[in-house]
Length: 54
Image (tube, rainbow, N blue to C red; front, top):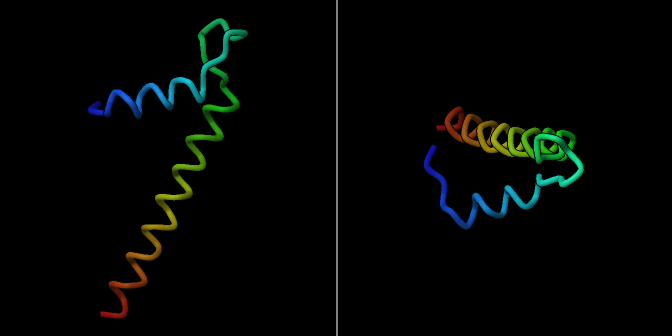
């Protein structure tokens, strides 16, 4: 996985949890992933709509 170090650190800070035995907050992690997937879905829908018009 290639990811910019600054972006990696931003995401790690976002999902970090000192209270978790694995070091991340599972709920925050899942919410973040779902949010990104919804964003991808919206972009894909827009691309599909554009390609159907052409």
